[in-house]
Length: 451
Ligand code: GDP
Ligand code: ZN
Image (cartoon, rainbow, N blue to C red; front, side, top):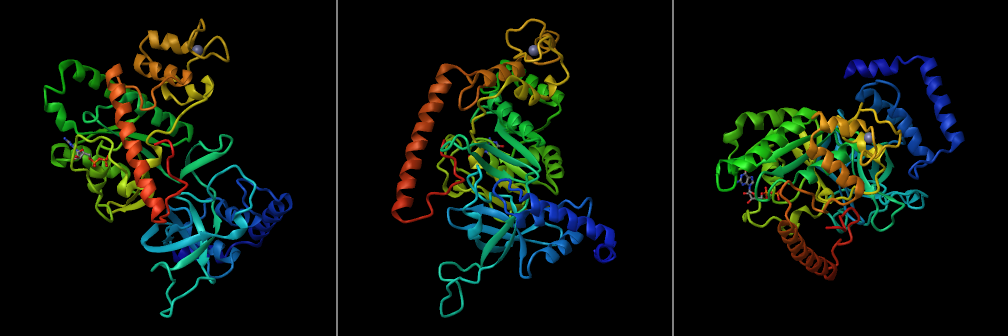
């Protein structure tokens, strides 16, 4: 570290001048992207000074920002309150150093097409709130956490977004800065729905995010009543398909991790140093999986394995969690079933890695009915699997089921899913009513209204 600081102090005048020129230019253009003020750009410009170290970056920040500002990471977003963890010198959030923040007023009136100023995973600069009302003991009245005000939000290196269901021309960013999207499914209870996995993978590809697949409850594959020969054939084929495309696939038993020790170890290795977004329906074992990663507090595992769709209880909010294995996780109730809709075939086919590099006769080929289609040829020749091609067509036509298509998606299964989600929706409504009555922060804006 010390060396980096000296390097900064030794910075040449030319480099300093360059930076000033750049900042002046930004000021002149008064560029505003996602409603950010010139100040934000000043801070951001410091972030993009080439390959400087975190320590150098910290020094830059302290020269650019007024004294007393701290770096933080957004942990949880409620309607009025934002939980922010202080970042250490390496830029890692210290989740035990929490602040309860609001957003500086000047960010409220920005003309931009995004719902929230900050989302979970965002890196911010904040300062202690000077206006907070204190009780006789010098504590903020409504919280035992220190209060702060978010002054800046940095540019995101990645994000998970969807179209805002309340305001279609707006974007609803749900998560920021994740390094890996882990799609979790269980082989049974509930049975893996490959179509849903494909949708999550498409979303990851669209955002340029690496993705991995975790298949949990493989112990149930030992049960011949569940895992028929026919199922096993389909299952093995599927696993091979995703591996062939280039996705990491982990087959684990979170309940009895010893059964799949080497896979769990491999998983821990691949998580290290990353901020991971977990996607997948409740009931597949996400909490059980997180508990294998030494979370800062234990995740509640649903006792009744037959209930696929439990109420959200503790997982109402997207929340960033520190893992003892040297990683961070965001369990993402909000991306259980985002809709991938309105794709043009070119964008969509780019989101299937194995489709890339196949040439079609027509530039605007939808790979559906056109002659001389490189994709369809590849399917015929077995270079692209029929299963993934089917997913593509389903997504293109917007006919995939909301819950995702499985290989054995009979009408019965779908009807069952619908009935279950209806029950769940009613339960949620009840919970919302209770929350409203008690004046809770029920209107959290990062919540998934589609659930
Ligand atoms: P989440 O809703 O995705 O967080 O899932 P949970 O971790 O709460 O698990 C849902 C249910 O699946 C619980 O009853 C767990 O005991 C069960 N479960 C989790 N992992 C396994 C596994 O590897 N094998 C089996 N058979 N059941 C599991
Ligand atoms: Zn084509």
